Structure formats: structure tokens, C-alpha cells
Length: 114
Image 1 (tube, rainbow, N blue to C red):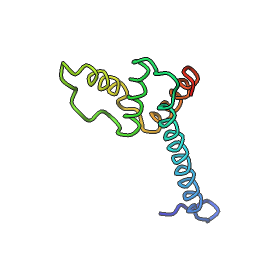
Image 2 (tube, rainbow, N blue to C red):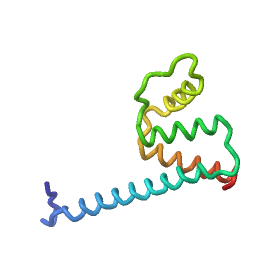
Image 3 (cartoon, helix red, strand yellow):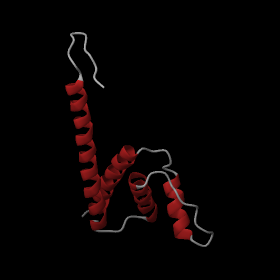
């Protein structure tokens, strides 16, 4: 599909440029996300359980999307906590979850060091 400009030209180049720009931005976010995922494992001190649940929830939302499993059984306390944290992210886009994850890891690096 081509778009015609008022001056009779085609908009193919502009559309291609915008698609290329969006793809490049997605690659940059993915690279920052991957770096953050590696960095969170290198913190000097272990973050609090609540912070780790946030890390888990953002990571799962960014990599899987909305929670896609049933809630764990009543005796799986850790599994339920993780599932509940992930469920709070329901509906959040992959890009938003990645950006929030990157920012969260940045805060944890400042708080706990690397």
C-alpha cells in the first residue's frame, strides 16, 4: 500500500523510515532490559522480598505477558506471592513492563550497589 502526498509523491519512504525507527527503538529497549536482567543478579545485597516480587512480576510481564497459569495451591506460599505480584501487572504492555523493569533495577542498583 502506498500513500500519495498532495504533491503527488509517494509516502513509502516515510513509512519505511518510521517502521525502521520503531524497530530500532524496540531493539534499544530490549538491550537495556537484557542488561538490567543481568545486573539485578549482581547486586551486592539481596533486595527485600517485596522488591524481589516486583522484579519478578515486571520480568514475567515483559517476557510472557499477562499471567497465563492458574493460581498455585494454598500451601505454595512463594508461588502464590509470585503469581499475585504478576497478576497485578495484567494489561500492561511489553514495552511498558520492560521500561518499568529497567527503572526498578536502576533503583535497586542505587540502593544495594553492584
